[in-house]
Length: 342
Picture 1: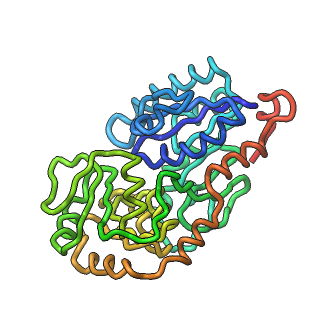
Picture 2: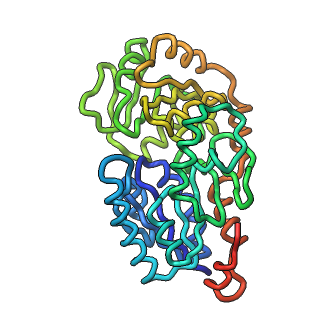
Picture 3: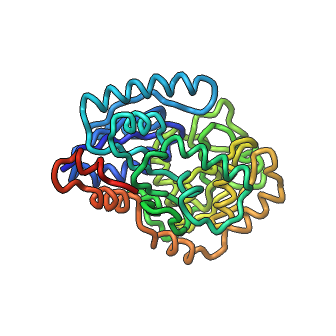
């Protein structure tokens, strides 16, 4: 048994949902403490050993929060002295671990941009931006688990590829109900939903929008209820993250993946969603009738091959556990970890 400090980035809930399945397996074999930033705490607060942490998010105040977290993480790690730090896209923790000589494993979707061989042609300057962005939470890692919604090959030593785990709460529906399920990380996307409702679609939105478009059913955020609805819906409309497109791929559900202008991460994800055959990509400002018609054309397209291809990928819970076992110290924990190289 080794001690693992597991840090989870807090923008959106995909990082935390991915972590739930990983942590469940690790708890059976290791001593794990989970440090949850931002929205990750909402999802993981009931996990044994979970503790809240200050969120470090892009935008104004990021440098100040990074510095506060770095100092706080150094103190946490010094007091507990873990054998390994695992970071799901969390930047301050990996830098704190490096400063104390603690090995780091990085987990995240952004790792695909530098550490895998993508089959899609992406805008060069945005590709480089994502490489720089993800480096802040992965640069000292001795192992990396790149989580993606389509099969890709590792490009660098010490890199593994995984898909997100499919949540057990999602029912296996033999038939689909005629409604569109919607979720947006930043509470936007309401114009697209209003247009879909006007086209005669039943739209079910999970969130807390300031306004509810006519014809859109609103449900308060609830992970269990959302998972159950995901297993029954005809299609999904949502932010171009990583976890939700992966679940759509595994379930054979088409997705309209939307992104804001200037959000390079979601724009790149949207491009990859469409390239993988999962659905249609668009930015919020150009979600035109033509885009919606293309999305509607996806509803009845056979998707069994896509679902089988995605499910055939190894899940993150298995891959992270395997990578940790591969690095397991044979004698004294810290001495063995320090001698490990990528």
